[in-house]
Length: 527
Image 1 (spheres, rainbow, N blue to C red):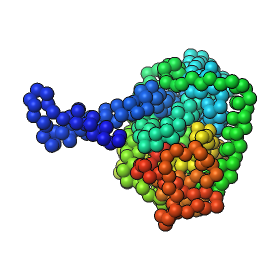
Image 2: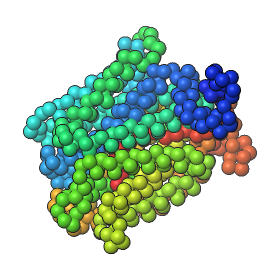
Image 3: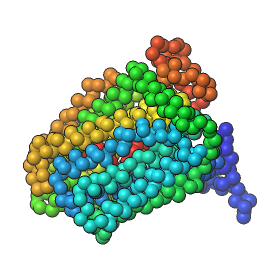
Image 4: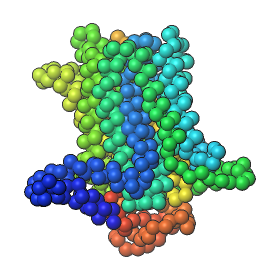
């Protein structure tokens, strides 16, 4: 039905020329259809899902996560380096605190699911998120001589604001995915492309703002995205609910949500892939701060990149990230989970050798300038990271039981955040142990080498990933209950219907597409 609507839109938009009465040629028609395809797609989403919902996804994923996340990455790095003047290992450790709000995503998910305010489940949390982010960014931007502890709290406030907005819009997306499953891949595609486009703009402008306003002044720009989330809290469409005995119902719902999460995560079909995703992220320790201090150090023979160039390279990487989305969507979404994650993780470990080559300056021995090599490295790492992460997020969406999508998806994202937190903390410990400082980078190459070895070591846990295809969802039988309204069929890998003791595979016969993943804080790719 949706395809028919799109075809009708195409005919009405590129059909007959009203001035001549002559239909365009085949080539002109194809070109016009391709140009107008995004317009038709957005019109279809607005018609089926509501314009305010689509605007909310674009604002949260494009502006709050994509733009703000990428801008924050560059501006905060320079803030700690040039304003607070702390060591790279210390910055790496402090960045752990910025992941704490993401670890608490199950709490935000429970609040949005079971704690309505004035009859609304989403609007109040958008308002709170926007106000918190705006105030936090304003304080860190205008306060001269801000103590390091206060700066950490302000940046945590910014991160908390993004996390709350993220889980709130995720709950809306999950609900719409259940109500209109045929549009689920379109919603996830909108998330992925919005975040990538926002990241592109954020990276492209971050270096310029840091250069002209300074690192502290540039952080003031971070107040703009949460301010738009405040407006989102006022205009996004949401039906008001009227409940009696709210306190008792809330307590019952909280207890039910917690019990449901515990019950679900105990199934091997759920905890095994969740454990793999945690290990994959945790073992890839982050050496980003050490590398950042090194390639922005202007003392020869260090690269000494300028602020504008750093932002430009990240912007090019954002384009490569969008390419990674296309590669996955067009070529890889039909492969089984275990196969694609095996080769993606292997490629992830091998691609890390580019970092090692750069740190050891072998690129100069090969006659490749620093600027060209780091651009190549950024593009390759972004594409590989996207191809690796998207199947993980798709797998996460397949594990959410009906009726508690927002809460359980938040739990899975919490597990991922714990993995990223462990990677940051592990990287900080390694940088400190190897005595990598603001001016001494003699052992930085050892940290990068250890990171690459640990990436490859993750392959030993690939057996935790199911062999199911990406159009299959692993859901425990007992958790489906009466909440599944769409017709499903039960399959084993052989294609014959059968129940299992611990769960079963569900194949949605109504759609041939898959869920697209969306990633928190697009700018924080692990390096």
